[in-house]
Image (cartoon, rainbow, N blue to C red; front, side, top):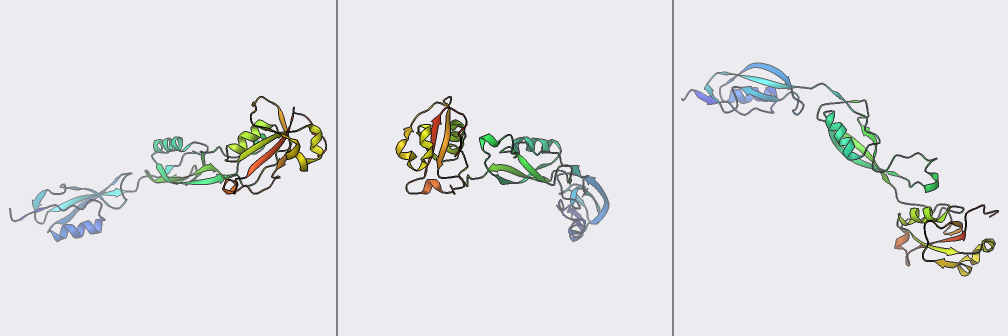
Length: 247
């Protein structure tokens, strides 16, 4: 029929743009109603009546349903959760994960774990919006995840038992040599490497106490394995674990 026209596609258009598109083909704007739709953009056309593509007489009024902003949702507290667990909590709350960034956390020495409070590695440190804040349905909540920083400075390990120190340093890419010396040799640390007997193997159950270290505490370890030759950390130990006496 020559006086029939097809309803144009105005989905996702604003009301004003939709009205102009209808007028361009000889149709008019009919009733406007609203409906909440978490996945849509507020203020745009969700659907028409008759539907897009329908043939209608020229001059017909086309009704529009416009997306209304959905009620804001409370952001759940996901601090301390791993990223997958946080994502699950957010999804259940009608939200999703937005941008993910990391925050570097300084390595914690094994003997300081009970006194130094740091967020567990791989868990959420904070969110934006924060827990308890408001967010639109299906909007993204940004996460910051704790990640261990590079070991920057040689720690003071004198007086510590050997096995946890070895684990701490080697897990962070350091090469460690261990020398066993007589306790009396501690008074002459300059000659320790000449007097000591290098230990190539030891059991974690063995009790060795560190009495001297090279490099000293505070030495910058960044890029140590790119040295020529690579840096070797030397630890000097005595058998047994007890008071060291004056150093």
